[in-house]
Image (cartoon, rainbow, N blue to C red; front, side, top):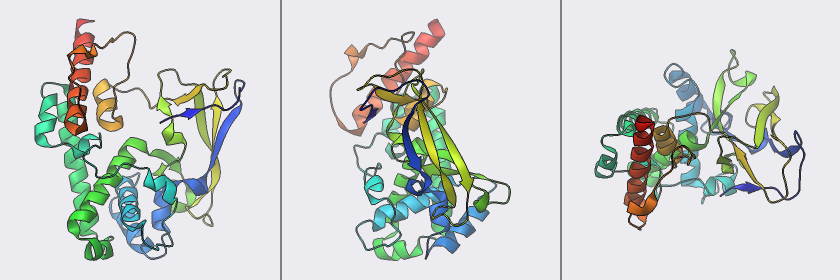
Length: 287
Protein backbone atom coordinates (compact mmCIF):
# COMPACT_ATOMS: atom_id res chain seq x y z
CA UNK A 1 0.00 0.00 0.00
CA UNK A 2 1.17 3.52 -0.72
CA UNK A 3 0.48 6.78 -2.52
CA UNK A 4 1.97 7.73 -5.87
CA UNK A 5 1.95 10.90 -7.91
CA UNK A 6 -0.12 11.06 -11.08
CA UNK A 7 1.75 14.16 -12.27
CA UNK A 8 4.95 16.05 -11.53
CA UNK A 9 4.87 18.69 -8.78
CA UNK A 10 7.17 21.44 -7.57
CA UNK A 11 8.54 22.08 -4.10
CA UNK A 12 5.77 23.29 -1.78
CA UNK A 13 2.97 22.41 -4.18
CA UNK A 14 -0.18 20.86 -2.72
CA UNK A 15 -0.32 17.14 -3.52
CA UNK A 16 -3.58 16.31 -1.75
CA UNK A 17 -6.16 17.70 0.66
CA UNK A 18 -8.31 15.76 3.15
CA UNK A 19 -11.34 17.61 4.60
CA UNK A 20 -12.07 17.02 8.27
CA UNK A 21 -15.44 15.48 7.37
CA UNK A 22 -13.48 12.50 6.02
CA UNK A 23 -11.72 11.89 9.35
CA UNK A 24 -12.79 9.10 11.69
CA UNK A 25 -12.25 10.86 14.99
CA UNK A 26 -13.10 11.18 18.65
CA UNK A 27 -15.47 13.91 17.50
CA UNK A 28 -17.50 11.34 15.55
CA UNK A 29 -17.92 9.30 18.72
CA UNK A 30 -18.90 12.26 20.89
CA UNK A 31 -21.55 13.36 18.39
CA UNK A 32 -22.97 9.89 17.67
CA UNK A 33 -26.79 10.24 17.62
CA UNK A 34 -27.44 7.34 20.02
CA UNK A 35 -24.13 6.65 21.78
CA UNK A 36 -22.80 10.20 21.98
CA UNK A 37 -23.73 10.71 25.62
CA UNK A 38 -22.00 7.48 26.69
CA UNK A 39 -18.91 8.33 24.64
CA UNK A 40 -18.81 11.81 26.19
CA UNK A 41 -18.93 10.25 29.64
CA UNK A 42 -16.11 7.85 28.74
CA UNK A 43 -14.13 10.78 27.27
CA UNK A 44 -14.38 12.71 30.53
CA UNK A 45 -13.75 9.72 32.80
CA UNK A 46 -10.54 8.76 30.96
CA UNK A 47 -9.22 12.31 30.49
CA UNK A 48 -6.42 11.98 33.04
CA UNK A 49 -4.95 8.65 31.92
CA UNK A 50 -5.97 8.83 28.25
CA UNK A 51 -5.98 12.54 27.37
CA UNK A 52 -6.08 12.09 23.58
CA UNK A 53 -9.09 9.78 23.61
CA UNK A 54 -7.41 6.64 22.31
CA UNK A 55 -9.91 4.41 24.13
CA UNK A 56 -12.89 6.46 22.92
CA UNK A 57 -11.80 6.26 19.29
CA UNK A 58 -10.92 2.56 19.58
CA UNK A 59 -14.37 1.84 21.02
CA UNK A 60 -16.02 3.85 18.24
CA UNK A 61 -14.03 2.01 15.56
CA UNK A 62 -14.90 -1.31 17.20
CA UNK A 63 -18.59 -0.40 17.23
CA UNK A 64 -18.39 0.66 13.58
CA UNK A 65 -16.64 -2.56 12.54
CA UNK A 66 -19.36 -4.62 14.21
CA UNK A 67 -22.20 -2.65 12.66
CA UNK A 68 -20.97 -1.93 9.14
CA UNK A 69 -23.16 -4.67 7.71
CA UNK A 70 -26.26 -3.32 9.45
CA UNK A 71 -28.24 -0.21 8.63
CA UNK A 72 -26.35 1.96 11.10
CA UNK A 73 -27.05 5.48 9.89
CA UNK A 74 -23.98 6.82 11.67
CA UNK A 75 -21.50 4.24 10.43
CA UNK A 76 -19.34 6.84 8.66
CA UNK A 77 -16.67 6.20 6.05
CA UNK A 78 -17.57 2.56 5.51
CA UNK A 79 -15.06 2.06 2.68
CA UNK A 80 -12.23 3.37 4.84
CA UNK A 81 -13.24 1.37 7.92
CA UNK A 82 -13.49 -1.76 5.80
CA UNK A 83 -9.77 -1.62 5.00
CA UNK A 84 -8.65 -1.26 8.62
CA UNK A 85 -6.97 -4.24 10.34
CA UNK A 86 -9.39 -6.72 11.90
CA UNK A 87 -9.06 -9.75 14.15
CA UNK A 88 -7.58 -11.99 11.46
CA UNK A 89 -4.84 -14.50 12.38
CA UNK A 90 -2.67 -13.00 9.64
CA UNK A 91 -2.74 -9.53 11.18
CA UNK A 92 0.84 -8.44 11.92
CA UNK A 93 0.24 -6.15 14.86
CA UNK A 94 1.67 -7.54 18.12
CA UNK A 95 -1.60 -6.95 19.98
CA UNK A 96 -2.75 -10.17 18.26
CA UNK A 97 0.37 -12.18 19.13
CA UNK A 98 0.31 -14.96 21.71
CA UNK A 99 2.75 -15.23 24.62
CA UNK A 100 4.56 -18.05 22.82
CA UNK A 101 4.92 -15.98 19.66
CA UNK A 102 6.15 -12.99 21.59
CA UNK A 103 8.78 -15.12 23.33
CA UNK A 104 10.68 -14.90 20.05
CA UNK A 105 11.51 -11.33 21.08
CA UNK A 106 12.94 -12.39 24.43
CA UNK A 107 16.27 -10.64 24.95
CA UNK A 108 15.37 -7.55 22.93
CA UNK A 109 14.10 -4.18 24.08
CA UNK A 110 10.83 -4.97 22.28
CA UNK A 111 9.78 -7.53 24.89
CA UNK A 112 9.18 -5.09 27.74
CA UNK A 113 7.58 -2.56 25.39
CA UNK A 114 5.15 -5.21 24.16
CA UNK A 115 4.25 -6.37 27.67
CA UNK A 116 3.49 -2.81 28.75
CA UNK A 117 1.51 -2.07 25.58
CA UNK A 118 -0.62 -5.20 25.95
CA UNK A 119 -1.27 -4.55 29.64
CA UNK A 120 -2.32 -0.96 28.88
CA UNK A 121 -4.63 -2.01 26.05
CA UNK A 122 -6.15 -4.86 28.08
CA UNK A 123 -6.91 -2.38 30.86
CA UNK A 124 -8.43 0.16 28.45
CA UNK A 125 -10.59 -2.55 26.88
CA UNK A 126 -11.84 -3.44 30.37
CA UNK A 127 -12.67 0.23 31.00
CA UNK A 128 -14.57 0.46 27.70
CA UNK A 129 -16.57 -2.70 28.47
CA UNK A 130 -17.31 -1.61 32.04
CA UNK A 131 -18.50 1.80 30.82
CA UNK A 132 -21.49 0.12 29.11
CA UNK A 133 -21.01 2.34 26.04
CA UNK A 134 -21.16 -0.82 23.90
CA UNK A 135 -23.79 -2.63 25.95
CA UNK A 136 -26.17 -3.02 22.99
CA UNK A 137 -23.35 -4.50 20.91
CA UNK A 138 -22.56 -6.98 23.70
CA UNK A 139 -26.20 -8.08 23.78
CA UNK A 140 -26.30 -8.38 19.98
CA UNK A 141 -22.89 -9.94 19.25
CA UNK A 142 -21.62 -11.32 22.56
CA UNK A 143 -18.82 -10.12 24.83
CA UNK A 144 -16.04 -12.00 23.03
CA UNK A 145 -16.85 -10.47 19.63
CA UNK A 146 -17.10 -6.97 21.08
CA UNK A 147 -13.74 -7.32 22.84
CA UNK A 148 -12.14 -8.51 19.59
CA UNK A 149 -13.64 -5.57 17.69
CA UNK A 150 -12.44 -3.06 20.29
CA UNK A 151 -8.96 -4.63 20.19
CA UNK A 152 -9.02 -4.18 16.41
CA UNK A 153 -9.93 -0.57 17.10
CA UNK A 154 -6.87 -0.17 19.31
CA UNK A 155 -4.69 -1.73 16.61
CA UNK A 156 -5.99 0.82 14.11
CA UNK A 157 -5.61 3.80 16.46
CA UNK A 158 -2.17 2.90 17.81
CA UNK A 159 -0.73 2.24 14.35
CA UNK A 160 -2.58 4.82 12.23
CA UNK A 161 -4.08 7.71 14.20
CA UNK A 162 -2.84 11.31 14.26
CA UNK A 163 -3.36 14.08 16.78
CA UNK A 164 -5.57 17.05 15.87
CA UNK A 165 -7.11 19.87 17.89
CA UNK A 166 -10.67 21.11 18.28
CA UNK A 167 -11.87 24.02 20.38
CA UNK A 168 -15.38 22.59 20.39
CA UNK A 169 -14.48 19.33 22.14
CA UNK A 170 -12.82 20.88 25.17
CA UNK A 171 -12.48 24.29 26.74
CA UNK A 172 -8.70 23.90 26.77
CA UNK A 173 -8.40 23.05 23.07
CA UNK A 174 -7.62 19.44 23.86
CA UNK A 175 -5.73 17.35 21.33
CA UNK A 176 -7.50 14.18 20.29
CA UNK A 177 -6.97 11.21 18.01
CA UNK A 178 -8.22 10.95 14.43
CA UNK A 179 -7.84 8.43 11.64
CA UNK A 180 -7.18 10.31 8.41
CA UNK A 181 -7.83 8.53 5.09
CA UNK A 182 -5.09 8.72 2.45
CA UNK A 183 -2.55 10.18 4.87
CA UNK A 184 -2.32 6.89 6.75
CA UNK A 185 -1.74 5.02 3.48
CA UNK A 186 1.60 6.77 2.97
CA UNK A 187 4.73 4.89 3.95
CA UNK A 188 7.48 6.10 6.26
CA UNK A 189 10.80 7.53 5.13
CA UNK A 190 13.64 8.99 7.16
CA UNK A 191 13.71 11.79 4.59
CA UNK A 192 10.04 12.20 3.58
CA UNK A 193 8.98 14.00 0.43
CA UNK A 194 5.64 15.16 1.88
CA UNK A 195 4.95 17.53 4.76
CA UNK A 196 1.42 18.03 6.07
CA UNK A 197 -0.44 20.42 8.33
CA UNK A 198 -3.97 20.83 9.64
CA UNK A 199 -5.41 24.18 8.62
CA UNK A 200 -8.72 25.61 9.74
CA UNK A 201 -10.62 26.27 12.93
CA UNK A 202 -12.77 24.05 15.08
CA UNK A 203 -16.51 24.42 14.83
CA UNK A 204 -19.34 22.97 16.88
CA UNK A 205 -21.50 22.66 13.79
CA UNK A 206 -19.19 20.19 12.07
CA UNK A 207 -20.09 16.51 12.03
CA UNK A 208 -16.84 15.66 13.83
CA UNK A 209 -16.43 18.91 15.76
CA UNK A 210 -14.01 20.26 13.17
CA UNK A 211 -14.03 22.55 10.19
CA UNK A 212 -10.83 22.56 8.25
CA UNK A 213 -8.58 20.51 6.03
CA UNK A 214 -5.38 18.56 6.17
CA UNK A 215 -3.07 19.86 3.46
CA UNK A 216 -0.10 17.84 2.21
CA UNK A 217 2.66 19.60 0.27
CA UNK A 218 5.65 18.33 -1.69
CA UNK A 219 9.13 18.57 -0.23
CA UNK A 220 11.31 19.23 -3.25
CA UNK A 221 10.40 18.66 -6.88
CA UNK A 222 8.78 15.28 -7.48
CA UNK A 223 8.17 13.38 -10.70
CA UNK A 224 5.08 11.56 -11.93
CA UNK A 225 5.05 8.06 -10.46
CA UNK A 226 7.13 8.94 -7.39
CA UNK A 227 5.93 7.38 -4.16
CA UNK A 228 4.75 9.87 -1.55
CA UNK A 229 6.27 9.36 1.90
CA UNK A 230 5.88 10.94 5.32
CA UNK A 231 7.78 10.61 8.57
CA UNK A 232 6.30 8.50 11.37
CA UNK A 233 8.75 10.19 13.71
CA UNK A 234 12.11 9.23 15.16
CA UNK A 235 11.80 5.99 17.13
CA UNK A 236 13.91 3.00 18.13
CA UNK A 237 13.51 0.04 15.78
CA UNK A 238 11.52 -1.97 18.31
CA UNK A 239 8.93 0.83 18.52
CA UNK A 240 8.58 0.87 14.73
CA UNK A 241 8.19 -2.90 14.79
CA UNK A 242 5.61 -3.06 17.55
CA UNK A 243 3.44 -0.11 16.59
CA UNK A 244 3.78 0.07 12.81
CA UNK A 245 4.59 -3.53 11.85
CA UNK A 246 7.96 -2.94 10.20
CA UNK A 247 11.57 -2.06 10.95
CA UNK A 248 13.03 0.70 8.74
CA UNK A 249 15.88 -0.44 6.53
CA UNK A 250 18.75 1.96 6.89
CA UNK A 251 22.04 1.87 5.03
CA UNK A 252 23.91 1.94 8.35
CA UNK A 253 22.01 -1.16 9.55
CA UNK A 254 22.09 -3.70 6.70
CA UNK A 255 19.98 -6.79 7.26
CA UNK A 256 20.78 -10.29 6.03
CA UNK A 257 17.52 -12.11 5.36
CA UNK A 258 19.20 -15.38 4.34
CA UNK A 259 18.60 -17.09 7.71
CA UNK A 260 14.84 -16.54 7.56
CA UNK A 261 12.73 -19.54 6.61
CA UNK A 262 9.95 -18.70 4.18
CA UNK A 263 6.44 -19.02 5.48
CA UNK A 264 3.25 -17.16 6.23
CA UNK A 265 0.97 -16.25 9.07
CA UNK A 266 1.53 -14.48 12.31
CA UNK A 267 4.33 -16.75 13.59
CA UNK A 268 6.42 -15.94 10.51
CA UNK A 269 5.76 -12.24 11.19
CA UNK A 270 7.11 -12.76 14.72
CA UNK A 271 10.19 -14.54 13.42
CA UNK A 272 10.91 -11.77 10.94
CA UNK A 273 10.31 -9.06 13.52
CA UNK A 274 12.55 -10.74 16.09
CA UNK A 275 15.29 -11.25 13.51
CA UNK A 276 15.19 -7.65 12.33
CA UNK A 277 15.13 -6.15 15.82
CA UNK A 278 17.94 -8.39 17.07
CA UNK A 279 20.05 -7.54 14.01
CA UNK A 280 19.48 -3.80 14.40
CA UNK A 281 20.23 -3.86 18.14
CA UNK A 282 23.37 -5.94 17.65
CA UNK A 283 24.56 -3.60 14.90
CA UNK A 284 23.94 -0.58 17.14
CA UNK A 285 25.99 -2.14 19.96
CA UNK A 286 28.87 -3.02 17.64
CA UNK A 287 28.75 0.47 16.14
